[in-house]
Length: 172
Image (cartoon, rainbow, N blue to C red; front, side):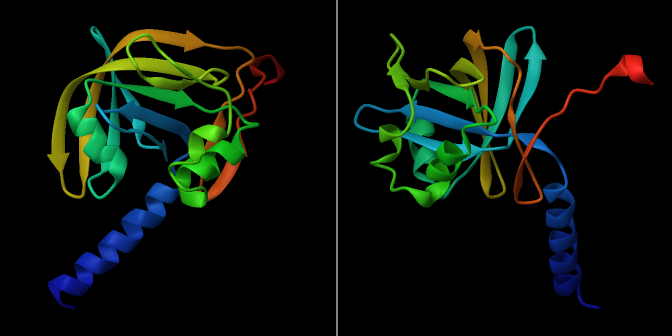
């Protein structure tokens, strides 16, 4: 077996493994001087509580990547279980210039577009951008956070939308 075929096999197995990671579905929004854009993402995770921060991984071939390199701020809009249509739209099912026509979008005083009825909005100031492989890891320091009840996030696992079901620890 050659190194190239082993690498291809490893990449395929790794991709299959990652598909099994359940992840909250978010729409990342940002804007530069002339453009605003949003894109569905699952590669979002907490980084630190001091300072409150998170990371967002964005493919370098996307328009959002280009905008986030120039922008000073971005917003992580965690979707609710009833927002599958928005996730699909911001995944490419709807042209980018029409996406913000769907949903209840507002603009923060800092000029960041956000989904008013998302499960969570985390408004971030970009602290760093670290290129790695095909993606850039954007580190955002949280400036403002909106949290809405009930807790019903949209989850994505193995190319399927899912919903979380709380476990009743009393029943065990």
